Image (tube, rainbow, N blue to C red; front, side, top):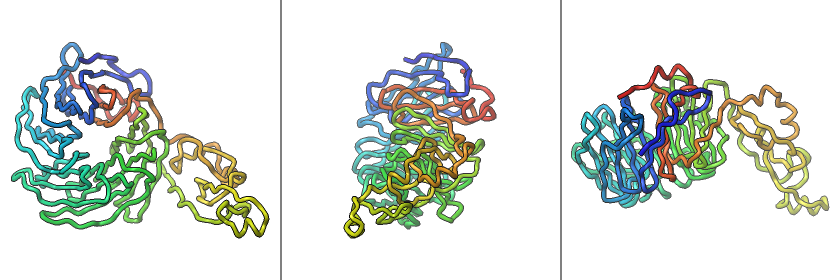
Amino acid sequence: MAAEIHSRPQTARPVLLNKIEGHSDTVNSAVLIPKEDGVITVSEDRTIRVWLKRDSGQYWPSIFHTVSSPCSCMSYHHDSRRIFIGQDNGAIVEFLISEDFNKMSHVKTYPAHQNRVSDMVFSLESQWVVSTGHDKSVSWMCTQSGSMLGRHYFTAWASCLQYDHETQHAFIGDFSGTITLLKLETQTYSTITTLKGHEGSIATLWWDPVQRLLFSGASDHSVIMWDIGGRKGRTLLLQGHHERVQSLRYLQLTRQLVSCSADGGMAVWNMDTPREEAPQWLDSDSCQKCEQPFFWNIKQMWDTKTMGLRQHHCRKCGKAVCGKCSSKRTSFPIMGFEFPVRVCDACFDTIKEEDRTPLATFHEGKHNIAHMDMDPSRGLMVTCGSDRIVKIWDVTQVVGCSLATGFSSR
């Protein structure tokens, strides 16, 4: 069922430790079991599986349970061993896993949504399960009574969710590219604000309650950091992926952000360094450098008897410029651009060689990464995707040696 690849890392890159195979369809979520050599997976093949590492070094399913509908997502709470499974039919089913991880007992089924459950969070503090779905809603249900406490509808599919357990604030990303912040109460809610910055659907969110930072990844290949705690609307744009960003984790200890994309790309961003906000793109009817008209500026084209030019924007200053005045390309990591982007000729001359020093490292997972989970205390990461394979990685050398002191063994 699984093959052991390596035992310890040799270079500063993720090292593949194990591959778990056996699913007959896309694996939508995989989580590492804390303090155990184990992984829990849920899949489109309707199975929930708990994989434990045996003495042979291979992972075998100690629990293999089939439900009535494809499994779309899960939320696992290790201390109570409660697991919540979101399904394609809109239901959420709760199980209790035994201490030896060899048995799983059904607890409740929650009628949370009318369509596929896209994401969920279980809150032990409030005894709620908060979820989003393709019925364009977020719902919160009481895990003690099993009853619906509240629901809010959006104009687009609600795709992902993060929840602040202390303040009961929920962050919901949707397919329109908007993030909505709600304050949830029993039987009611209030909309705090909406965040707009992505040019594509939001695929993943990660909330750091300590520094009060929200990270979002989207189909526009970008990651945005929203400084919620700063209350000044500060945002940082991070561009280094070439495909849809589908999973995020922020590591508080080392102040690093790990992001994974649909093409298997893994990025580790150094967030413990001064960064600059990317400028807003300016609007203009003519190039703000040479003053030549853009192609929609009919009047100036007629007056000057010239052909209109295509509009571009300098990533460093945000000015609207023509192609001739922005012929250069450069990386500018301090502003989040890890690969060469368009800048105007004037800005290009101000960028020094040391300004191009990368602030992120990029690695190859070699499969579509639909979901990722990490155990920073052991320097472990698990990835899964549409190729039906689950991969376990040693990322100790990538995210900092201080994270890991060794691996547990059974």
